Image (cartoon, rainbow, N blue to C red; front, side, top):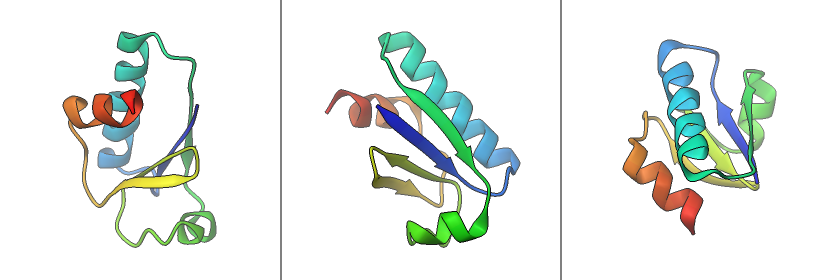
Amino acid sequence: MDIKVLGPGCKKCKATKEAVQQVIDELGLDAHVDEVTDMSEIMKYNVLTTPGVVIDGKVVSKGKVPDKKEIRKWLSS
């Protein structure tokens, strides 16, 4: 599973990456989380408000820090 957290590296972006990583660890998943800070890369996903979360090429969240319950739902589907 390939997961990207999109954002300039702000506090909310870091919190999102940490939450995603915690859920991955809790579920024992084989997944890799990348932090994408380059605005031209972020724009390729049509994300205008950060943080954004992309799982296997699909944008699942943008503009907010998702809670763990929401992240579990994404990673379990």
